[in-house]
Amino acid sequence: MRRETQNILLVLLGGALLKIGINGDYLRYVKPAQQPWVVAGGAVILLLGAVAIVRDVLTARQTRTVTGGQDHDDPARSATHQAGTDTAGHDHHHPARSAWLLVVPVLAVFLVAPPALGSDSVIRTSAGAPRSAVAQDAAAFPPLPAGDVVPLTLTEFVTRAGWDSRGSLNGRTVRLSGFVVHAKEGVLLARMVIRCCAADASPMTVRLTGPQAARFPDDSWLEVTGQLVPGTATAANGYTPDVTVTALQPIPAPQDAYEY
Image (cartoon, rainbow, N blue to C red; front, side, top):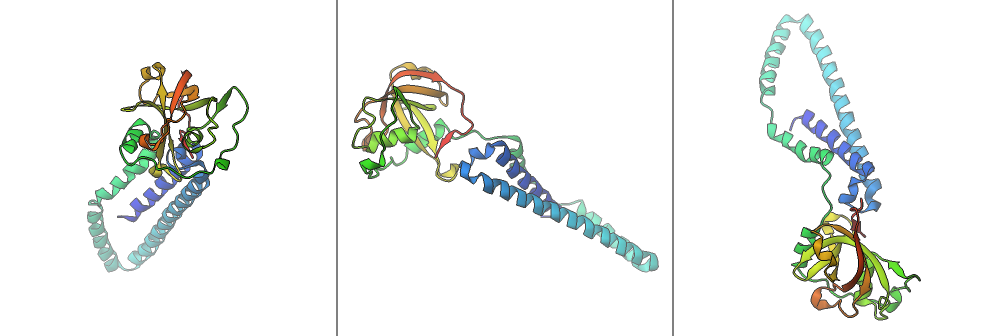
């Protein structure tokens, strides 16, 4: 790969990392805590590319200055240098074009923000091994706050439904948000949970009872109010509890679509 190509790739890659780190698109790849590392990495790579370009430009100018003086003093050396330049010029017309293909994924980051993982990822993950039970002490679940409707993340809701021996969700009305997944088990409300980055994402799901949610297509975002059907989160169904829906409404997809 030519040095010019390397330097341009460094500048583009560093700029792409800075862009997604500043405008929030990094949330499609990693959790919020990783933002400083994304921004810092982009800044360092961009700086390295800029320094390499400036260094190469200065080196080329010095080389032309030295070579020009030698050619002026020695006509024979000038003719030899001219022949070498012609040969180099001939080689310049046949660069390794395949190296420029590396620019394509970097430009894709600049121009296209990939969507967050959605219903397809839930279906693929559900086809694999089910979530295993994790021993939980009842003390790990603090009392739910007072109020007619308790807002919870899907992670909090599913964890309590599957492993809280005190049954703190029984009889409580909760508010959940997530995207719709039409699966063989029925209509699911889902969120993808990541621990480090999107590569390790796994789904949290609840099954929505009643006909209200069936009219919404896959990946539609909903805010759902309802109650847990006790005893429905079991190992047999991958700890996917049923929710009796009392109300729901479509909502815009959040900028940060993941839970952590």
